Image (tube, rainbow, N blue to C red):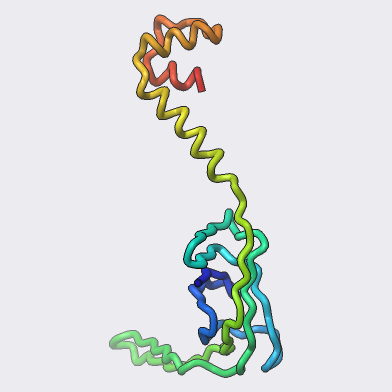
Amino acid sequence: MYAIVEISGRQFKVEKKQKLFVNRLDAQEGKKVSFENVLMVNDGTKFSVGTPNVSGAQVDAKVLKHLKSDKVIVFKKKRRKGYKVRNGHRQAITEIEISDILTGVSKKAAPAKKEAKKEKQDLTKLSVAALKDMAKSKGITGLSSMKKADLIKALS
């Protein structure tokens, strides 16, 4: 079982009992935190994708410790000018351990879009004569000058 969750502006693929480093969180060491921005959940049999988040899904984690990451050297130089600047930076990070992934029910807006696409695909498979007959039954005027694309646009 795994989930894709957004934690402090970054997306992570997480599994149960996984340890990972994230940007500094406002929680004390040893405390539990929960993340509700779950973008996708896969529990082996069901696959839920959120639009944009999976409703009811949640990832629980425990804050292990706060620390700083490795130093990143920032070196600037302009040749032949005698300009050199060397700076370093250590990002504040938090180590967390995923304790539980709770699944929820995803929104079912996607099947409605698929049905609309199927209707459009059916219209493209029809001949111009069949499209003109459908347009006449709906009361659309000016059929003689319409091309197939115009007929499909008028019918949808």
